[in-house]
Length: 250
Image (cartoon, rainbow, N blue to C red):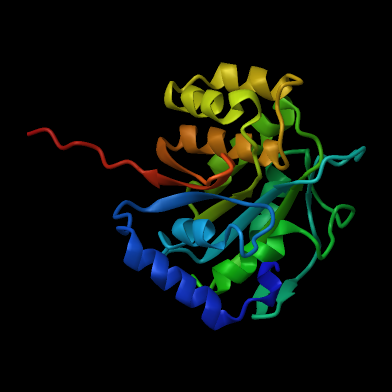
């Protein structure tokens, strides 16, 4: 049973339970990593991630997901003016969409990869119960090469740095041959070259790997601390990246 069958009350109660059971993160969160599909099996873990967002923290959200295929346009953003879920309508941030198109030649307003099965709709239902009022931008990655991922991360870092925006990266990564532990260690070591080599290798496994690595690069550039949450099947079902408070020296 996926999140489309959840009521607003069920989602809000899940978020309240998560906030009650675990301490609230005091540092601002700028990046979330969330499962591609949200259902009963991972709902609690997702709530433990989304609970760190306050209702008035952001006025726009960028949702990034992978849609690999033989597409000429590598970074696609649907032309929709709005997106509609069972909980209501969300306006698209058209200005931000145009800003990204102006930033880099790989960004296009294109409906080729758009469908109602996008992870976008799963995340929107969580966001509609988390934020009071926000606009959204949906982006799909059609080529998960290190070159495209670097271009995406660079554009996000620069365009969104001055925006009051949350970025949600949609990904499901299985712990194939200890993949997650290796990735997490490279993140902690800030071994970005190693991460890019791994992305280009045949060893990587999981849906949304490109979106995941783009999120790692953005978090590194913004000096965010990533908190990974693993479930019983050793999948990275959720994570969030928070701003690190700098020590004060007197």
